[in-house]
Length: 165
Image (cartoon, rainbow, N blue to C red; front, side, top):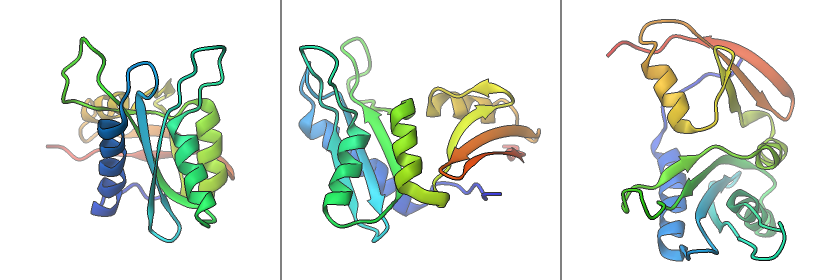
């Protein structure tokens, strides 16, 4: 059973890299999402989402970041995060952490190995974003919560009990 720990500084560095890449490379109609992965060596690799105008060949930022890590000689990733640039009607300075799509979940699991876990459900309800997970945890202080998680070896369930504030 995996142990869930708070984000460490090394995890926040991956998030900051994803935020930086989309802030610097955002282009309306082309690049809306930035991602970063940490390779097994500890080095961080970034990628941006590639939007297509014709057809549906768009490519997720996570795919580009994982590919960059593999091209650089990494054999696995140990962390992955994607962030979306704000839309026109949203607060311009606030980036949003995105959950991986189904294909990206598969790639993260394949290239992350047994150490990378993806949260699928909380108390039987699918989790579609990090914000949904945070809301679920905050709404159950001191109460047990059942998580369904997955990695390349399969799925598992565990129970957590969020600390009371």
